[in-house]
Every structure is written in structure tokens, then in C-alpha cells.
Length: 400
Image: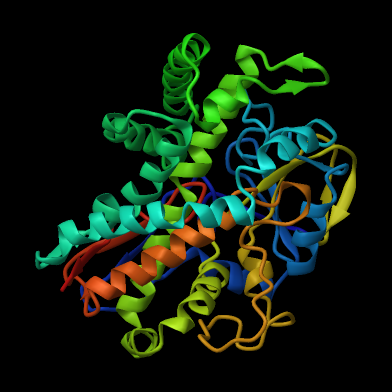
């Protein structure tokens, strides 16, 4: 049966950040470990944060819910917002409309299309790392991990690269504020409006002078025989903005943190770079940071939780990806693991469309970093924090 946890008993989505002090070089006290603790005691619980929501901590049940879009709708994907004032397309659409958008976008993110971008992706990563390698250290999230995939996204969409600082600031407002920082969502909504206004201007520019970019191409598409209206185009742009700006930087942050704190594994990938792809998959699995949510369309029981129609259900991917019934030594990054069938990119019809590009960017980041900066460590004396709807490290200073 689902358990109720109140304000004094835990730290979950929208709550104060997990905090760990790295001054003694200790391991991360992370959200993943909290999920591990919960898995052993129950299949789910009720959080009383904001309007309340259910959290499923049974690995198979999480995957089942993600695949059952009829019962668990994507009309809301944020546990604190059962009735959102915003729309992200296609993430917050259910089939069949979602399927149409996904089909239109599919060729831009197919394995072949992504592979053709590898020279550009590799060149971009190399340029950013080259700017750092002769120094003695850096805040690597701000100076590399966030800039690298953001630049790739901006080029795909045909956006001016001079706008990079503005985009990074918007990303924080949209994705990294805790409930305490933005209890009524006003800051997030303001940022969304600013992003929407920005893309409104970009859409108007493309209507006058189309370019050979994803934004221009999308404006020529039709849904059910009708051109995409401005409202839906804005919603699409905002979703692409968020998808392109946050998940890969978080993954890169965890990869650099992991290899900085596991020098024996860093030595292995330096000696044999062919181990990097498995290492990347293992880091995606072990450090699973995405915590999707869905809105129940009917009364249902899942993970022992008696969910009522209209209630939100949080589905942490970590409980599936770190499930001891699914993986041997599930908490360990194993560079020689044979099966890496994780769900770090989700499951079901909303599985991440950009997974091929994300994998390329993450593999390239790890490869190019270790070609140029093979010996590095987490800088002493810093306090590292995790927070937000996706649990990434807020900042990470490395020394070399």
C-alpha cells in the first residue's frame, strides 16, 4: 500500500536540493540512493508537496506506466502541475496526435541523420575543451557541459549563437528552480513567455525568409491537413529548447564527476577507448536523473498506490535502471557489462526522440575530453548540490 510522506520526511521533486559536502572527497549523497532506500520498503508513496502526488518506486511498475499512455496521460508531465498553463509539443501530447509529430520529426533525429553531424559535433567539443586544457581547472558545467550541446541545438534550429548566454539563463528559470525558489511557478512562466516571444520573432523571420534549418522546415508541416498554427509552433519550439539544453549537460556532468572520482575506470578508458560507449550507457543507467510524471485518466492501482483519476504520478527512472532484479550489481558502473538495456531515455510512445543525438554528444564529450585532459579531479573545498525536476549537479569545479 502506498505510504504518505510529509514535509518533514523527505526531499523530492520541487523540494530543497540534495546537498553533499565534497571537502573530504566523499561520494555523492544523491537522489539515486534515496530511491534505492525506498525500493526496499514499498512500491510507492504519496507526497504531500504542493497539491500532492503519487511516487511509484517499483521498477517494473514504472516502465508499465510509461508504456500505458491511455491510463497515464502526458497532458501533464510535471508532478507539481496537474493542470499546466503551458504546452510542450510533442511531449505533452498523447497519441494519435503525438504520433504524427513524432513521425515528422523522426528523420531529423534518425541514426543516419545524427551520424552525419558527427564531424560538427566533434569539432565543437574539441574547440570548447581546447579553450580549457591549458588552464589548471574550470567550472566545467558552465564552461563546457552546458555550452556544447546547446550550440549544436542552436545550429540545428538556425538560431544566432550570440544568444547563447540568454538561452542558458532561460534554461535555469525553466528547469532548475526548486519549489521554494518558485512556489507558484511565476518565474518559470515568465521565462516561458520570454522564450515564446523570442521564438515568435524567429518564426516571423522564417516566414519572411526561410532557411535550411529545423525551424524553417517545421513551419511547412501540416497536421491533419492543416498548417501548424503559431501557438503550436511556439509550444514545439519551447519543447525543443528544453530537450536540447538540459539532459545532455546533466549527463556530461555526471560522466565527468564519475570518472573524476573513479580514477581506476578513467585509466581503463584511457588505455582502451572502445570501453567508452559501454561506460556512457552505464553512467546513463546508474545516474538516472529524469523523473517523468503522468496524469491518471482513471482510477487505478499501481505500485500499491490507489491513484484516482486526475491525480499526478511521478515515475523515477532510477528505480527501474537500478533494480537488483533487473541487473547484477545494479549500483555499479561496469565498463564490461554485456546488457545495457536501460530506460534512461524513457519507455513507451514518449521515449526520447533525440536519444541518438544525445548518445553521440555524450560519447564525443567523453572521448574528446579524455584526449585533451586525461588527468583531473574534483576540486577540494566545494559544496556540490543537486536539485530541480531533473537531478543534475548544479556546479562542478575540476582541477588538472
